[in-house]
Amino acid sequence: DGGITQSPKYLFRKEGQNVTLSCEQNLNHDAMYWYRQDPGQGLRLIYYSQIVNDFQKGDIAEGYSVSREKKESFPLTVTSAQKNPTAFYLCATQRGQDDYGYTFGSGTRLTVV
Amino acid sequence: AQSVTQPDIHITVSEGASLELRCNYSYGATPYLFWYVQSPGQGLQLLLKYFSGDTLVQGIKGFEAEFKRSQSSFNLRKPSVHWSDAAEYFCAVVSSSGYSTLTFGKGTMLLVSP
Image (cartoon, rainbow over all chains, first blue to last red; front, top):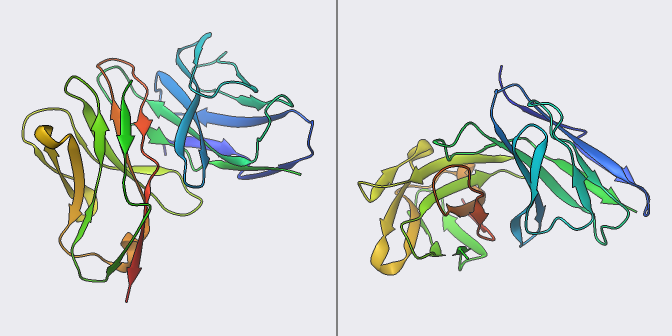
C-alpha cells in the first residue's frame, strides 16, 4: 500500500543531542512538509521541499535542518540549538501543484529529557 | 498573511445531537479551505475541501461545510454525532494555486457525551 512512514513513533533523547526523524513516502508525491504540533498550538510549518535537492524554511525553522536527496525521503534533524524540541512531529506530502489535499504520516513524538 | 481562527478550543456534544465547528479565515482573495480530523497520537485525515463553486461542500464520514465569503467563515457541520467522531478538528487555508503551504488553525477538540 502507498503511504508515508514516519519512524520511530516515539523517540527519547537527552538534552543537547541532535536527533533525526525519518519520513519516507512511496506515493511518488513531489512536495514534502514537516510540521510541529504542540498542545493548543495547532500545526506550525518547519520546512518544506517541492523538488529534490531544494527546500525552504517555514515559520519555525530555527534549530532544525532537513535534506532532500531523494524524492522518497525528507529527514528532519532536530539540533541542540532548538530550545524546546519536545513535541509531536508530522510529515506530509502533496501530490502536485493541482492537488491541495495533503497526506499525513502518523507522526513521531519526540521527548527530550 | 493568511490566518485561521477556530474560536472554540473544546466542544462537548451529546451523541446523536448536531454539531457545528467554527472556522474564520483572514485572506484577501478567494482562499482554498480544508477541514482535517486527528485522532489522538495519529496523523491528520482530510475531511473535505473547498476551492470554488458550490459553497456547500460534502465530505467523508457525513460531514459538510459551508463557505460564507461575507462572514469569512467555513464552518463544519454534522447532523448527528457518533461517539467515534470524538477527535481534534483543524481548519486550514492555502493562499494560492501551485505548491502552497497550509496554514492551520489551533484546532477544536470534540468530546462526545453518551
